[in-house]
Length: 127
Picture 1 (tube, helix red, strand yellow):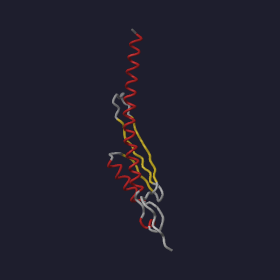
Picture 2: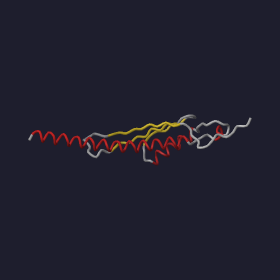
Picture 3: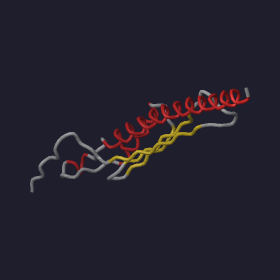
């Protein structure tokens, strides 16, 4: 009888753990997707002046603005930063656990990095 009671409590705890981990993984995927799309949006902010001179560089202000706008559209808190060669996004949220323990939360944070991209060929520089 005691064995059955202990086994029932063990399986109840395991069920709660599996359910909570599944919820955290779902939120992690969503946050990761948001961070990835944010850096991709930022990486598309190619500076036009250097581009027409044959260089592929970011416009840091536009890259940061596009990155932040994308994070906001996903409803995520986070930070974005950019320089001429790289854009970085860190997205954060808290996962709601389906079987919560009192006072326990699951913070989720994902950081993604990207470099400038352009979907064509660089213009020929005559000179």
